[in-house]
Every structure is written in C-alpha cells, then in structure tokens.
Length: 411
Ligand code: ZN
Ligand code: ZN
Image 1 (cartoon, rainbow, N blue to C red):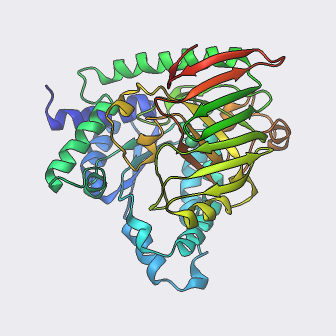
Image 2 (image 1 turned 30 degrees about the horizontal axis):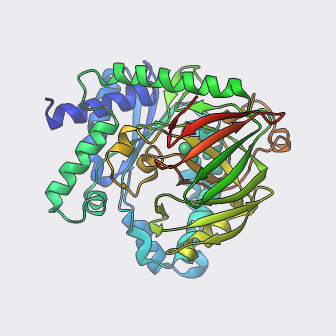
C-alpha cells in the first residue's frame, strides 16, 4: 500500500515519463490551477531530475474568469491577452513539452450569464488557435493530467464532508491514472500497447460508416475518407517520440465525415460545458449537420455551443470505450471531460484531429476538408456509451461487422 505522497510522486512521474515523455535537456511548459501547487512542485523537481533545461510554470486562478464575466464591461469581453497567447505559442512552436494540470469547479461559471461567458470563450479560443493547431497536430509533446481540487471533489461527492470527498476523489484519480501501482510507468506502457493494437485493427477494417444503437440513439456516422483510428499515444512531430495526450486515456477514436451523419443520438451522461451543465439532451443529424437539439436542462448553453460556428453543428470525433473500462466501473460521474470521456463511448461536436486522417499532419487543410474533415473553433465531447450501446462497422459494399455489443468490444 503506497502512501499519499508516493502516489502523488507517481502521478508526477507518469505525467513526465508517459505523458510528455520528457527528454534530457528539454524545456517544459507547466500550466495548472493554483490549488495544484503540491503536484506542480513535484513535477518541476522531477523534470529537473530528468535533465530538463528549464521548467516554465504558469498558475491559473479560474475564479478570475468568473469575476471578469460578472464585472467587465460588455464591449470588453472580446479582448484577449494576445501577448500571453503569443508566449505560449512561442514555446510550443519551439517544441517545448506542454503539460497541463486539469481540475476545477465544474459549476464555477454557472453564476454568470452564459452569453457573456460564450463571448469570452470564443475570443479566447480565437487567440489560442495557433497553439491549438500545434496541439491538434501533435507537433510538440503534450499531455493533460488531473488534480483533485476541493471544489471538484465537492461536486462529485456532494453528500460527504469536504475532507472525505477529496480523499475519495484522490482514490479515483490515483486508480484511473495507475498512480496507485508500484510500477505505474510500466503499467502504462502495457496499456498503451493494447489500445494501439485495437486502433490498428479498426484502421485495417476501413469502415465506411458506423451504426450506433442504444436508448434514444439510432445514428449512422459516416467516416471521413482516409480516416485512421488513433489511441492516446502519439509520436510528436518535433522529436518522433511517443507522448500520451490524456492521462487517463481509455479511448480509440477517429474522424467522422462532416457531411455524412443521419439519425438521432442521445447523451448518456450530462455534459459540463463552460462551467454549466447540459442534461438529458439529444441531437438529430441530417447530412452530418445538427438540425434539431433538445435538452431537459441547459438548453441555452447547448444552443450557444452549436452556434459557435458552422463546424460546431457537425461531428469531429467518434470514440469507442468499453463499458467495463475502470473509470466506468467506478460508477461515478466526474463532471470533467478528461474522466467522463474515458468512461464511455463518445462523439465530439466541432473540430476533428488531423492525426485521425491519413497523412493528416502534412496535407493541407482544404484537402482534408474535401475528405470530410470537420473544421471549427469548438471541440466538445459528450458521452453516448452505456451497457446498452451496440456498434456495427459498415464496409463499402454493405458488409456489416459487429464492433461493440452491449457496450463491450465484439471485434
Ligand atoms: Zn475523445
Ligand atoms: Zn474529444
């Protein structure tokens, strides 16, 4: 049985040795919430022990975003800290490893007007677009790892005292990130190999479309021409070494065709978007575009997501996760995409990943778009998986292959 300190050290170690695969003499950009100092300092220490030439640490206070949404003059909400975006871009474009700590209050922004929040978020995304381009192309090594901040723990475990809530969330975080094992780095290598074998298998099938059936869901998702299936591990363009972009990761995913989707899909879990919750929602697609959206709660926020731009009404990712995945088995709803998307099969509205297209990183965007690649400022995952989800792969010529049955791999 490892102590809390040992597990936190393990998490730092997984972030550096698996997540960004930090090399001797590399520079590291480390961004995380002010609540996560304990992990940020351990990561910094271990990074120098691994031979990092410099660790640039950036603390973020999410509450300042809420304060701005509530207090700033309306006409200033489109202002962006361009010099900050430029600094991050300079480091990313140089190939610095990019490590982000995830963790916050899922409900934080619910105290603000959703339209004001959406205005700020859209402007911020626009400013950060050159960085997200590098991220999406896996140019530099990057990863996201979790930290169990108290506000997040309160949301996941509302019925217990704060200390106990945080302790329980840490247990879930350590289990999902394998930081509670004696050799977490070795366990991660085995896990990533398994996911990559599944991705190779699915790419070899070269399906034309997937057919998904479940409660409230009957959706045919056309796949982009020349799509490839990817899993969490990916070689960075800058050093040709594998980095694992999400810790945890359980998914195998690819690019839908932006113009080919027919039917209705119902979310199997609530979606926490910009600090607000969208619940009980369903989307209907025609020719790949959302033509109808309903929600039991958070309909306004859902609408503002769909109105981000043309591409936000189309799919950019379909990801398969077995219902027996360890995060799913915890039975918890984390209100956090990093966890919830790895508990269930999901799709994303918005931008696709170049890495899920053949030669996607080297071909021009226009060529990818002709093959069905979706382009948008948004990329928002929502969960559709459950113990009742069946997935078929449809090959050209009409041959149907069972891919998942009752939420489990059937390949
Ligand atoms: Zn995903
Ligand atoms: Zn996604």
